[in-house]
Image: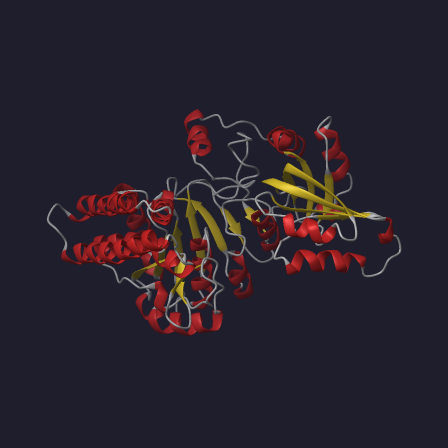
Length: 472
């Protein structure tokens, strides 16, 4: 039996009626193999729903309801373009039901000045339900409610999938609808917990949904359709000459995602790697253009595959002479981080100090108070993390020297080599991050040149969040 393919399209690829028609055309071209379409909300809708919720919590009920009306009117207008001026009963019913449910939710939030996480998941997941309904009606294709398939725990806002339960549901509910010649449509980002309450996988979770469902279906391929030609060697908004990486290993892709590459949700590729399913990153505006294939055993073949960057971050340095020869001291430090739920990105140690980076927006008051009980602390905010990623770093002498030479007079606050020796990371001041990336890219990609087609360059660079510190 032929395995289906999973095609995921993000918000920029489903921004309006014209883009939705393009998605339909791409799916139909590949339908011989059987296709599951996984869609995000229309571009900007999730943010608009979150904004409406914030207005309600602030007591601005009328403003919140007006924002909801604008969101629903937008879907109605897209529906008219796709389905014709006459009202489509199924779309009208979906919009009416959404208006009724979300209006009640927003009124309750305005009254109580509170929007529980469970209700927030209900609110923010509506964009995917509406975008997929529009496309399913346009294509006359089966519409699948992902909440009946993608099973999760009850961690609202950042739910963890139950892969075994999801596999059983997908095999039963989706697989019969994606046989050769068939197309079915479902949502990214949303699922449901054991009690049947709506959950979400966190921002960027549509990619994760596609990977989970692809693994559950034993798909032949998981295609992530975005607005750039694959994973790029750097963020094109910062490094205009950044170019697509044709092949990536799973480890390289995971490192790039973890260190700021926006083309993939950091957890996206894990279900795929466990099932040995290739993931391709493609451009929905240039479907015959270049792409990146991420597969087990693949490699870019480059000494350095790509650069990634994330910031701002904060460096927390813990220093005390008692670390010298003191067994268990590091464990004591990181037990404090872990107990307070603070994730650490990079770690660098010396005989008497340890430095770690954390996201800049995290409140550190409790952590600082506790650590100061047995050590000296230094907090350095407004830093950026830059990672040089490549599965050949360990076997390529001189990488660090080349990087130091390229950075020149840019001050480096911290250096860390990844445990798997496929990333070398630096922390610099946030204001130096862009120049540092440009210098490193020139050093490690000397043959790269700015795209000759200025229109193409402008199209790539203008797309917000599109890159591999690579791409989105």
